[in-house]
Length: 338
Ligand code: TYM
View 1 (tube, rainbow, N blue to C red):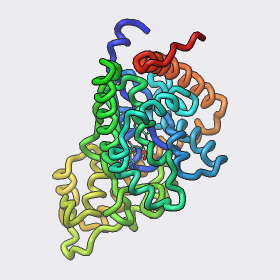
View 2: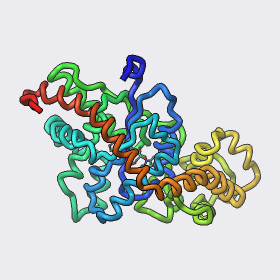
View 3: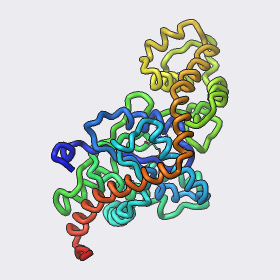
View 4: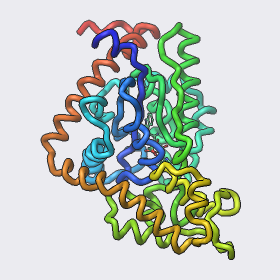
């Protein structure tokens, strides 16, 4: 690595291959990763170790992990410019994850919204991994000395806990970890379900969820059926409290077209939802079309995907190893002689 690239700020993020990528993952995260300027040193991975905190069908998990990589590339993440890898291929994640467990408090973990939501949803399988998940996420981030973590709003709490763990460790042992900042987009940070605008878009609600690989017909159908409100004036106005369905569609439209809310209000002035909803659908179809087509093409090339994730893991591992060695030394573990 030359001096210039050593000075680059580090960006890092990951997505669980627990389902196919959806519009929330794209607008809240991946789209912004791809738009980040060249001056960052970027690491993006499939968080497969996180995914097994909920039971998975092994064959499906394997399929989704590589198709997710194909989708990252199709969304514009060039493997030459970004380090793309599978979390489980870089064993330092699990190792630092264990160590950070010992610097993360029971009370902190108990307060995590994602833990509360998931343990309510999977009451028959509230396992230790689900509870200590944020310590592994902190390891993911801190191993690479990340400056910024580009995520949707729902991951803010985990990022804040990561900062607290890093600060706690640094206070005990001296400067070891960079304290990272979450990097949350202004629009698209929280995409809601099309069928229930009170809950976030998620793969567990397929009717309200727009998948990147949905066909144009399927997308058109989902947007046509999107829940708006029973407001008699049926006007397109940004009012998240009283018109959450419309606000969500405006958020989506703004994210894919770059138009401001006032421009959108002017565009649909006097036109009603019957015009607005299909138009949002059309804009989404056109922005996802090249991604879907490119992803289908890449998914078919298994050898290429293997080459990308092999090189990615090698590059990631070289960086992660350095941090882990430093941590071992600081906490008093004997240095590995090989
Ligand atoms: P995950 O897999 O649930 O989601 C991946 C990314 O997509 C964003 N996102 C959304 N953004 C807007 N609207 C939505 N409806 C929506 N749903 C999901 C998430 O905010 C996230 O950015 N714990 C993480 C994965 C992870 C990670 C990491 C992230 C593991 N290690 C290290 C960053 C850094 C998670 O469960 O995201």
